[in-house]
Structures are given as structure tokens and as C-alpha cells.
Amino acid sequence: MTKIFNEKNLLFILSFFIIVFVFINYIHNSYDYKRVDNNKFIKLNKLEFKENLNKSLVSNESYNAVISENCEITGNMHNRHKVRWVKSYFLKNIFQFSSSLNTKLPYYINILLHSFLIFATLIFLEKTFYLKKKYILFFLLYVTFIFQGYLGEYSYSIFEMFFSSVALFASKRKNLFLFCLVTSLAVLNRESGFILIIFWLFFNLNYKQFLLSLFISAAIFLSFNYNTINCMINPKFFIPLEPQKGQINLTDLKSTSFFSLIKLLMINLIIPFGIIFYNFFKDKIKNNFYIFVVLIYLVTFLIATPIHHVAVKLIILPLIIFSFYLENKKTSI
Picture (cartoon, rainbow, N blue to C red):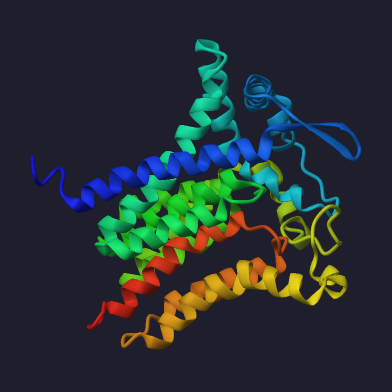
């Protein structure tokens, strides 16, 4: 009994409730309003808020743009969402099924599902790196900070963060089956999931197994998105070159005040990547594949995502935790 209720296990139990609380707070702060005209919003009471959110979660219109088979290249970054239809289809069916049981359920399912994935990420990181308590607290602080503002596409990032933690766990445990399973799911969640395949080389210099996991994940990705191949061969499908309406583009930074620019860069790039590079240069054992992946994410965030999108920074949280592990590692992996 004492082993079950030791200090660390109690910290994990507390962590779960903190994560749920943080996510509920985020949902309420981000979606408890409605637009009444172009420039005016009104705050909803709790009942109206939950009704609106439940309707949005089960409405076919919320998913049609992603699930429909037609793909086109319009210069909008949402074009690439067409290859993410599997996860949208999965969520749509979960919410609609839960709504058939009770119309109030989708709201709670959405909170529990995403909160559980964040918590499961922490558990897999613990099982992989045997985290000290200070790194568990760092994880919670990082998540809490990320969810303080409005986040676009938070669901994709939470799923990808979870898949990243499982990929690290499978790679370190040399479990190729689990690794191929999670990378195959990751590429269906978001195209950046292909980066996770390189995680195998963090702990295993077996290039045949790496190529096998790449082949399996690519084959599954293409088999589920064969209708979109004609669009995918155009680079603009994944990285639109046109300025995005309603998004902060790199060219917009010229007109941004100095202090706002520094704040934006500090929060979205300098702090998260600064921690990684600081730990990397302190590492006695250098993992070159790890820093290669970090650089890929850095370039991806710079050219393929709006610079103010904070949610995508969740993806690199497992890599930040990995950097602490490498910093404390005394011998070769």
C-alpha cells in the first residue's frame, strides 16, 4: 500500500487533476463567447457555452472540410488538412456516438480525451527517462503556460505530443512493432508525424529497421490518402507561399513593435529551443540524430506554421524532457 501511495505516485495523481483543470480552464476561456457582428462578441453563460460546444463537436459541418474527398490548392494552409482526415473522422464518430447516449457527453469526452493524452504523455516520458520530480513539475508548468491563451489546432498538437512520447519509449525499449504502430498513427494525425520516424535512430543505429518503419508509415499514409496524391505532389499543398489571411506571417514582423516582436520570439522559439540547445552543448554524450530532429522542427516552425501558433510548441515538449535526460547521461546511449 505504501508503494502505491508513495510521494511520486501522489505527484502523478495530482498531475492528472492539474492537467484536467488547466484544459477545462482553457476551453472555457477560449470558446465561451459568440460573434454577434463582424467586430462584436458577447460572453455566453455556462449553459449556452456547453450547448454551443456540444453542437460544434457533433456537427458534420465541423469536419466536412477535412473529411471530404476533394482536394485543391488555393494557397491556404488549411489545404493540407485533407491528409489529416482519419483523426477527424475518428473524433467525429466518438463525439456523435457519445451524443447519441447523452447530448451533454461530447463536452466531457473532449476534455477527458485530450487531458488523458497529455497525462499519458507524462507517463510515457516517466517510463522512458525515469523523471525526477523537478522535470515533472517542469512538464506541468510548460503545459499550463501553453494553455493560457487561445490555441489553434490544439487537438493535432496534443495527439502528436502523445505520439512523440510513445515513439521515444518504443525506441529506447527497442520495440519496433510499437514504434511502427505509433509512427503510422502519427502520420495520419498530421504530416509532421513523419519526423517521429527518425526517433528510432536516437537509441538504435539499425538503419534497416529505420527504413522498415519509414516504409510502413509511408505506405499507410499513402493508402489512406491516395485520393490526395495529385495535390501532395505540389509543394504549395503543404507549404503555401502566399501570406495567410488572419495569420501573422514573417513579413508582418516588420510592422510589429520591438517589444512585441521580442515577446513573440521568446515565447515561441527562443525559450523552448534555447533550453534544448543549452542542454545539448552541456551534454557529455552528443546525440546527433536528436539535434538533427530539433533543427527539422525549428525550420518547420519557421516556414510551415504561423509564428504566433503556440500550440505546435507542445510537440517538442518530449524533446525538451529528452534534453534533460541527455544532460544527465554519463555514458553512451
